[in-house]
Length: 450
Image (cartoon, rainbow, N blue to C red; front, side, top):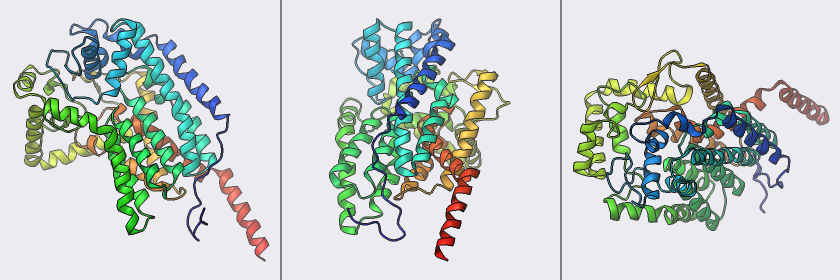
């Protein structure tokens, strides 16, 4: 192994796994299962049980509807539970998981909801393991331990996995796993490893494509230390890995729907967030899932053409209302990082509103606190081997699509481990004991130099 150049950061740590980290994993799992038992309503099933439209919709929305279609033998279809035919509204892995549970437990019944909540609790409990490895490789053992413990105890990370039917928990695990492996391999990883890591990111993208927004930061991390001759080779190796895994789904969407996109709904989300009635949160009143006129147009045009038309309407509105669009964008950025006005009514997916109860206040306070501390920690992050590029790049790039569409608090959850990592680095940086240690070491060094 070549020596570290003068002034460069040391390479990532290659220490073996400390078995004590599994105690943190068990703590995290116990807290999440305890929350499930305390609530007595896995993934909100009891609230959806009396739905007039069908429990699969109010329980799982598009994910639940597609899973129901798969379980019924209708294929990957019907995102609104209204018989609309093949769809690309979601990527395949999460609806397939939910569909498998429907098959095993006999449909949309409470045991299905419990099984899904337990799987999500397990996924959330594994995040501290990979967060520990990411922190150890990107910064220090201390930051790795602190980040793992804080995420295990993080109230939102305890509550959300067992209360919602969404892919957010699995995406959070996937992002943390991918970043940990990336930093462990280092900025000078060989091309073969970059292909494997590209395949890993492609697998995460088949749960939800949002993490593909990290590609520019990851490429910068790998390309920056290489000479010109090896940069193209590294980029091609990584992108080939991504394409190898995501290509079959893109091909399916092209053949079945006429679009090579991994998901087909971006234009619709853009329209829902940018119109005369938009206020920042999701506006279900003009979404085809709730609006009969929009749904009729969705059926008439087909999913891909309808999404393109909705996107064109959104862009026309944005061009005609630049000031309003700028204010909405700032509102959405605020919602993403620190949440909405805590005194305002919460807007639900259907467009209905409700007042924030005491658990909602805890959720808002935790969301705002971790958001603020994570951003401050990212600015001051001093990682190994350029790892700060990945931390800052993830926080910069991942939210961009939400700034121009709409925001739920759960949309940030895939970034929550990165925010906790950055916040942990900030805490270690300012902790008085750490400062005293640094001052003592500096003083000892000064005396020895005399």
